[in-house]
Figure (spheres, helix red, strand yellow):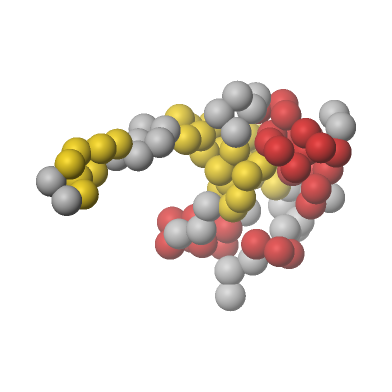
Length: 98
């Protein structure tokens, strides 16, 4: 896979209390990824960018919430989330929760 595509597949890490707990307990990291990305592309992107070995990838399509703003109803965008489990003993230094 080309380097350009590696940077396009993973949009940014998803940071929350749940993801911090997943990092600490089960060595999993959560990323927002492109909607057309496949599990194989996500695996290759994480291994290529962060230099870790990926054990598994799970993908979730998140539906956008309905919101209202100044008496107008609207809808947030749908997006795709990837749960990536890395091999035991390996960490992604840039995403470590303090």
